[in-house]
Length: 114
Image (tube, rainbow, N blue to C red; front, side):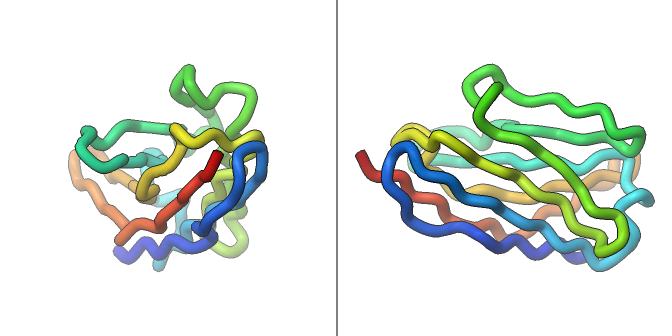
């Protein structure tokens, strides 16, 4: 399984970015797909998750600003990020799991300047 992220970059606070995660296989084979992020000196944290049934969850700090979605036709999961804040600066990783098997992408950097 390969997960390839894209869409990161540098934006000013208040701006938007859309991250994409292209999977090498049918995304409905996974129990769930998610976006994590890791800022320098901090632990990796879950940002948003969508399970195979379509149920979405997200961390409180991004509620109302970030939205996870998917397009099964092209095996891609997205993270739409609006009203970005400097504290959103991190490397963002795509994650998928099939039961206890986990798969990670290489990550894409998001930098938000004030």
